[in-house]
Image 1 (cartoon, one colour):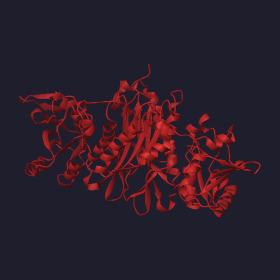
Image 2: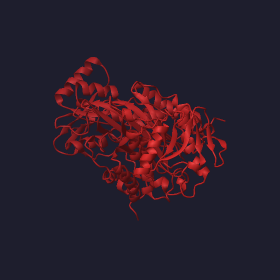
Image 3: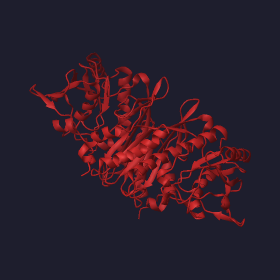
Image 4: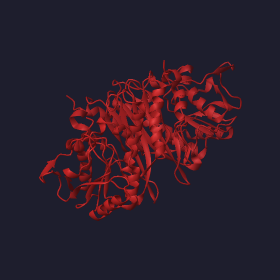
Length: 303
Length: 303
């Protein structure tokens, strides 16, 4: 029996495929962060990312086309935000069954266009091809000033772990198709409180925090009492559900305290402190009784 | 009955979707050429393109995965070549059924990687998601010196119409999955014989020449006797088949004659003169007997 991709899993497959990428001097970050980071000029980097969504897996025709478009564009904008950058230009590739109503495709496009417009993202090209099921791929470029770049690597022991919003059950509500990518929050943070590490919560809190821990070679402890949850979400939902598209970031205690004071005063956006980075590896949860429970980073994977 | 995309056709759909693109000052060319052209710096432009291929429409599992990968990467590199540029960085998005053997995905990737490597293209990211059928989207960046940029617009009456190779039946042979994108030829041309207009033959000779004529607001006459054909290809095949991925370009008679002399002497690459641009609109064929036949630009469309 040949080994299937289901048996090696999504991250196993990515590890295998990483072999087929060769380094060039102007690649600052290749595969393995929210976006690729490319040399642009002495002042700025180019950010470059793509996400694909498929009918029957990520969405069904029962969902409004506008919402699907919003999500396809939004998850890419969120990736750019996770690097501290601003999105710029998108390419939209659509695989479409011939029998699809034109109005459906227009609604899909409107969802992408209207969210894109809010963040100054223009669709400058792409592809439209026949397909048996609807497939949408959005490729997105962005830019970031060199000094504003934040990656998954850089979290330091003692850092506070923070998030921009509540977690859990997003994909059971309309949050996953109507969320606002945290571009404004990201830009505010990199300009005034430069986080040490950042990612967006797309696979789930423990899975995405796991990426920061792995890249930064540190461990973490989350505080059950402090994790903000979406309406109806259990602790488990908040830890393991994906698609919240909130930012998850770490910064020094001094900065974090100043940020919380700023927020208490200005009442703008939401920033929650939900745990601490620690030197010893592993991911733990301090539960309501103060006991430490070991967590396994896991979340949504495709295979 | 709602209007379906089949009823408006591929180009009708693109016209509808163009509404949902807004202009920004740093977009030099948006939707409507082989790639988007974006402001980069005073010396160079960024080129940006994407192509999607779907199982059951563009390929079947009977075809070698390596060949499919080659094609998915190659058609994008060909688009960059058609603008006079050099490809740089790719994002590969894969939609994959869970039951697919890992070896299949590796072969697909090898096909992309090996062709990419030849042209210094690194895969720097992308997406891997579950899908019911295999879908591949490659997004590709490139660069071109501002003075080397060639678009579909610019063909002038009197220009010779030229191509880099034989046409027809590519998709019935292995040419469509093993072609070499004409990057070297393109670079040679823009550096020494700057064409007035250029495109790659992906939809078919008359369809792609039609794009040049439309953008340049001119007409053309093709010479039946001069159109080079792939083995077994009829005139009809050469006029209407797609997927040859040869360059189709126009330049002044003086330049074209010098190019043909250069080639006769150096025996490098292939350049064929196949017709003339004329002021009066329309597309004609001078047949073997010298009679003029009106042609309708048509080729492969998805819907």
